[in-house]
Length: 144
Image (cartoon, rainbow, N blue to C red; front, top):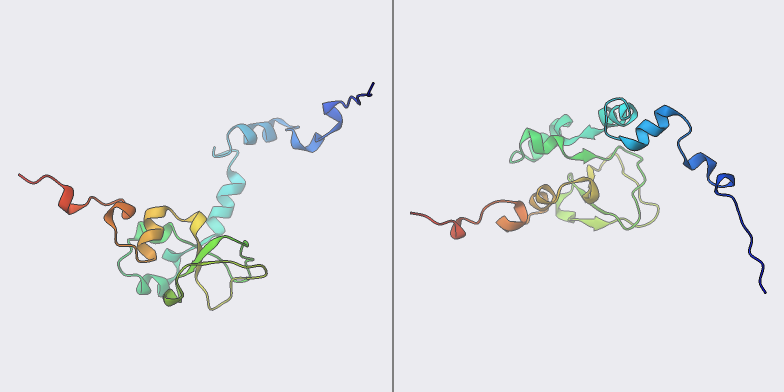
């Protein structure tokens, strides 16, 4: 007959559970104003394409709203291996998957695909299919 070892849950992962009302509230409502104060500070520190005059000039077809939705990775940021990126500064290179040890340099305006909505990403990389850009196909619209 085999022996079973019984382990109490409370002995494990003590730090994983909320210990204070603030931690509990943050876990329940991560996007609320009170619980999201740290996240909003991080959002304020991020650089968007809208804040870079050179990018604004390089992409005149993008609206202010679209430029604000593009987060530019700061110099020295470690790129996540296997994640897809695009360098707004070097458009001819196209999108790429990062390998290990790759970082954002001062000559890059990297955006991450997983931080960009699909219609905007597709527009930036040159997709012209209206369906993939969330635009109506003019040929399929019934005209009187």
